[in-house]
Image (cartoon, rainbow, N blue to C red; front, side, top):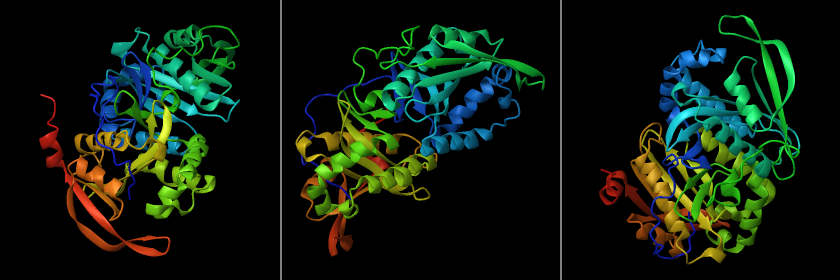
Length: 416
């Protein structure tokens, strides 16, 4: 189901937004560097990167020695389960959209607690400062986004490159842990444990580099500390986490009247109900590659939601739904955000490793604003499903629209 502002497309050219990974949710680090949240359809790229760097990785990360190529799918699934649980994540370090390494948030603590990071970079990209920049960005994510008080890095004592990353960012050597791990040959090795205590605004108690300031022109608000997909110069789609539920609930309750007119689910807009939505649908959907439900950000502020649901992977079809803060009607926000969603659906292998073939929009027949979005974007009206919606005890008719992949491609041909 869908609700929109009824506006026409924005009259300004959006142009290229960044060189971040296309059609992916990522944490922007600036200057062409980003951390891409690895989804199921990214596993083949991850597998290729692992195989190309196996010998390089085994020296410092023996856990990679027994891995087979097909294990990339299982590793990706486990990292997404970690993300969905709110306990951490694993992301591909991408330079100008191409994966060159990995950063893993092994654990993410409650505010004030301690979290642990790990990382590796492809052999061909060592010595370029990429990991230092990536870790700096994650420190900013942890501090500004989640109020973490301490971050630890653990590495082999003879891994000089890794130790220099920690020291360069102001981490202090907290312990030398004797024979606390093993090498790929099964021999015991010592590890160095570094820690960084984060001050109120990101300095490690005033020592060292700490988290870098965001680059000039970096997005504000949630866009700075969450995984997002850029839409244009002022809009992004953000993966909401548990900590964002209060913000989402406030926005939904402020728009309760218009939401409840068209959306059956809007009967309960409490914090508890929306927490259940984020933890029971939004985050698990990304982990399963079963569509997504994300926030619409305008200059870093949450203004609505958009998602792909009712996904049938075997048929390669899904349905788009959306709603917008009534105060932002008339700015083309939904139209622009849905365009970005369609591009991801039809131009990336996000539906079980292949592009979607059919996307639907269904709306109450009297929801003219929402129907206008479908018509504006070239969806074909297919008819009315009678008594299809049950809202507030009343059965309502639904207008159904569709857009096919070849219709999208005809209007948006791939770059030559």
